[in-house]
Amino acid sequence: MEIRQLRHFMAVVTTGSFTAAARSELIVQSALSTSVRNLERTLGAELFDRTGRRVVLTEAGRALLPRARALLAAAEEARHAVAAVTGLASGRVSIGTIQTLTCVDLPAELATFHGRFPGVQVSVRDAPVGELTDALRAGELDLAYLVPDAGELPEGVTAYATWREELVLITAPGHPLAAAGRTLVRDLADEPFVDFRAGTGLETAVRRLAAHCGLERRITCDVTQIGLLVDLVRAGIGVAFVPRRIGERAGLPCVAVRQPEPGRTVVLAGRGPRPRNPAAAALADHLTGAAPAAAGRPDGRPLPAG
Image (cartoon, rainbow, N blue to C red; front, side, top):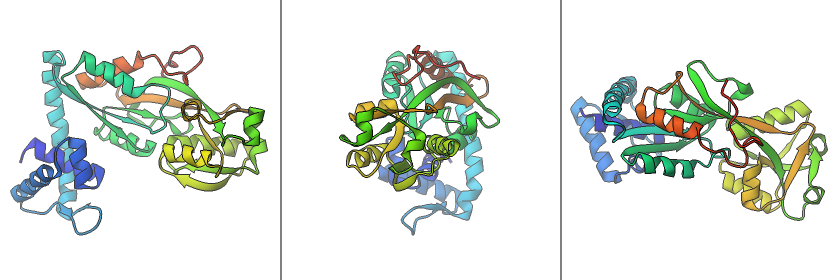
């Protein structure tokens, strides 16, 4: 049984398919399938039920899962120890992010990080906040951008930096609210809304805002991709709350909302006061020192953690 095979096994578990797992591991699907088959032969049991559209764990696979996680975590510890001595000439770091992250230009920051540490492999996963939090606590992610529900992080998760993002109301061009330029939350009762899927940081922030103001929104459409949400608003199906930078990038009218001014808190989080993985610690240092995008706080710096 090889570490590589266990990593491929966990990739299938995480992504739910061999195709997506192969993409995440940067290998062809046939090679990943062969690796998992060889692991099954070594263990003498099938680990996945492949009869449905989505592969699911068998009883043997469920039995292996916690042990695979433990073995991979131990292998990462060994890799971290070596990386610490080699000055990050190699290493691996995994980071999770929400789809609607705007306080930091993550692609640009990862490109700069890669220029400094070309031997470090970076794995990026986008998912709802709950999934990112679970993966961070399980050790599947080293770092993650989260939107804490009610401003609280679960036990064992530490905020390394905090940003405040302004939320605005985007509308289709020509919408009456676009000409006004600003509105009150209570005046939106008759507006149809396009909403993000439940469980995402954006949906949670918007739902909390609406509840605070006593606004019962009429949801005409809910989506799982921010690009589709923007396109639906552009087509006139409804209005939506989004971080200002997303509306500006889309070229849609951004209506400022008063009383209260809506916003959400975004944190870069990890486990413990500092990541034990040297590559993750280096990336955390880089990202906490990164210049936030325009959607951060007015003075252009992240808010202090805690």
